[in-house]
Image 1: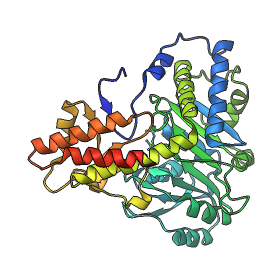
Image 2: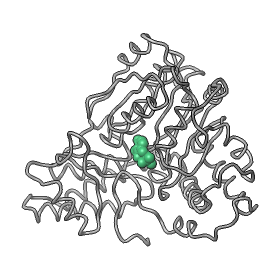
Image 3: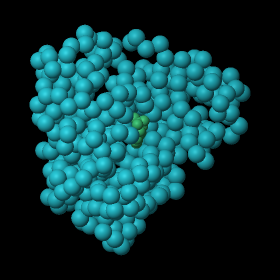
Image 4: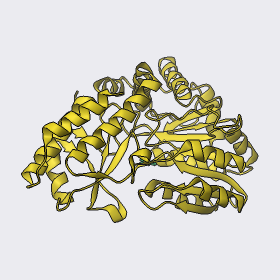
Length: 387
Ligand SMILES: *Cc1c(COP(=O)(O)O)cnc(C)c1O
């Protein structure tokens, strides 16, 4: 790997050499048939990733742009949106929707807890909500939303189900034709960015619209966006040789390669690998007296927020890790200083996490906390291979 450091933050995630190679391809004209073929292939693979019979949109931007596209193309100003939030990224939909004159109501879980289905059902019964947002994995807390409960609750009420998959897509199943208890109970919109579980550098906003979400766009007379209006992109996504706004040619090359790697591994195997990896990383860290914020039953396969043992200084700890080539992220809001966040998604390898556990153990020992490195690595390896 060309990477010198282990980037184990909640995204961007480690980039493998094949993707760097694709990124440094010669920049052809965006209308050159050689490029158009690659663009088309990347879109076809994205459709397979979400198994949608609707349309996918891949444009220059980040996950936040994809969030914006999801909202403004389905909910008109004055209509009601319900935000179900398990943390910082769930909350991001609130100011975003308000910026477009959408009426927002929110159900916020206490950090580290789940929003209960009954609360959602009660809320939906109290008003005419056009859509509901759910963050599949909230990157602030490492909580994974329970789609088996939430999709039926939302669809029963007739609202559109919008899934923020930025920290989940390509690591946790997000199948838009999967039915959750009734043929009409399906996910309507899924969105993500290139830099998390897909393992490509940051730079792309990716969003999939199912048939009902596309119909919702048709029903909105005046969308408050131009670059973000999916109607402007529809002709390009159907025929990527057409021009609307210049696509980021090299990022598309990288994305296409990233998606090829995802498909070569196989979606189900990738989902199984991430589930095992999440459990294994947490089990390894627990040997050191660290405590994941999320109860294991709702802990994410992609990212963990982990509380320090008594007396470990966050800034000092992360600085020492960085000196050894391992980069993790601090925790947000009230957890800042008390916990850290470690990403375990995308193309990060088993070897990396063995090394990461060694570095964490050595650093703890150095800082005067006893850490049994062999035991942590053994625990990780056992669980990772038990899948
Ligand atoms: C990272 C992240 C975002 C924001 O994506 P950007 O690419 O930083 O704009 C949104 N939602 C979730 C769940 C995320 O993890």
